[in-house]
Amino acid sequence: MDTPEVTHSRWPSPIWLVPLLSLLVAGWLLYDQLLQRDVQIAITFENGAGIKPGVDLRYRGVPVGSVDEIVLSDDLKHVTVHANLNRDAEKLARENSRFWIVEPELGIAGARNLDTLVSGKYIAVEPGDGEPEKEFEGLETPPEQQPNLGLKVTLVASHLGSLKKGRHIYYRDMQVGTIGDSELSQDGRFVEIQAIIEPKYAKLVRSNTRFWNSSGLTVDIGLFKGAEVQASSLENLLRGGISFATPPEAGPLATAGERFDLHKQPEDDWLEWAPIMKWQ
Amino acid sequence: MTANASATQQRTLAWSLLLAATVWLVPANLLPIMAVTEAGRGKASTIADGIWQLFEAGMPGIAIIVFVASLLVPLFKVLVLAVIYWRAASETHPLSSTRAYRLVYWIGRWSMLDVFVVALLAAVVQFGNLARVEAGPGVLAFALAVVLTMLSAHAFSPRQLWIQHPDGANHGHA
Image (cartoon, rainbow over all chains, first blue to last red; front, top):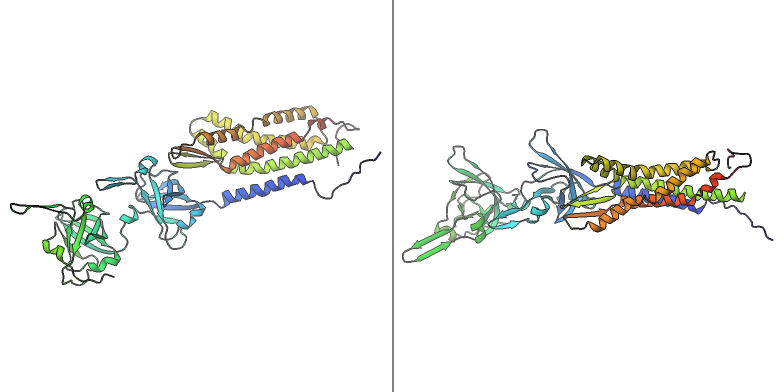
C-alpha cells in the first residue's frame, strides 16, 4: 500500500485571493463613489421660492446635479443654494456659467415650462467659458430674457402699459434688444424704461431715433375708407414690445444712457424710413 | 495529525472568507443602498441615512429595528465568528462557543432581508418621475458581506471545537 505523500506548498492557500480581491474591488468602489465625489457649488439668488433640497440642476433638460441645502445670507438679502454637480458635469461650473430658476410661465402669448407645474421648479445651467469656479450668482430671469451687456438707453413714457421687463425691442420687426427695469421718474410724472439694445445692433440707434410702443393695435375707421387695423406682429400685440426707427438723415450714434421719448404710436412716415446704416 | 491538518485548512478558509466579508462591510455602510426618487426629486441614502430618516419621521421603533438588523447584526456576526475561530484551536468552553456559532449560523438566513427589501422596492416602485426606487452600490456590498459571512460560517465546522487535546485544554496549535 502506498502512503499518501504530503507536500507543503510554499505559497499561501489560493483562498486568500478572496479577501485580497474583495479588498481591491471594495477599495475601488469606495474610491469611485466617495473620493471622486460630486462637485460642490454655491449659487446666490435673490429669491429661492420653490427651491428645496433635492431639486434638480439641469443642462439641456438633463439632470446634472441636485440641491443640497439652502441658506440665507447674513444680511438676509440673498439665498445661497448649495448644490452638487455630478462628476461628468463638472465642466459646467466655470466662470461666466449662468444659473437660473426655471418656473412655469403662463401668458396669453404662450405657456412655457409647463412640466415644472408637476415636477416643481428646477435650476437650469448654461456653461461659461472661464476657469473652473465654485461660486456663482444666479440670474433672476432666463438668459434669453436677460440682456447681455448692450447699449442702454432710457425711454420716457407716460404709462408703462404692458412693457414689462424681458419684453423685446424690434427694428423692422426683428428682435434687436430687450426691455430692462423700469421705474417712476423723480418727479413722478413719467415712467422711465430701460431699453437694452444688443451690442451688435447698437449702431442702429442714433440721436434722432424715434421709439414707439408697438404693443397696441391701431384701428382707423373712416366714413369712406372703411376700417383699417394695424399691428406690428401678433406676438408683439399680445406680449407687448417697443419698436424704433431712424430717419433717413441718421444722426450721430446714441450714447449710453441717452433719453428718448417713447411715443404711443408711430407716425406714418416713420414706418417708411429706411436710412442706410452699416450696423456691423 | 490529519484531523488537525484539516481543521487548520477549515479555519484558513473560514478566516479568509470572514476577512473578505469584513472588507465588504465598509462599502456596505458607507455607500448608498438605494436611491428614492419622489416627485422628480432623487435622494440616495446609506443605511445610516435611512435609520436617521426613520427616526426624524417619528418612527423610532422601526428605526431601532433597522439599526439592529442592518447595522449591528452584520457587525456582531463577524465579531462573534472571529472570536470563535480565534479560540477554536484551544477552546476551553466548547459548549458556549458552539451555542454562539449556532446562533450566528441561524441568523445568517435572515440577513438577506435588507437586500430583498431593496430588490422588491426597486422592482415594484417604478412610476417614472412620480416615484422610483433604484438600488445603490451599497446594497451589492451588503449582499456580498452577508453571503461571505454565511459561507465563512458554513466552512467552519463546530465539531473541531470539541477536539480533545491529549493533555486536556490549552494545547496551543502551532
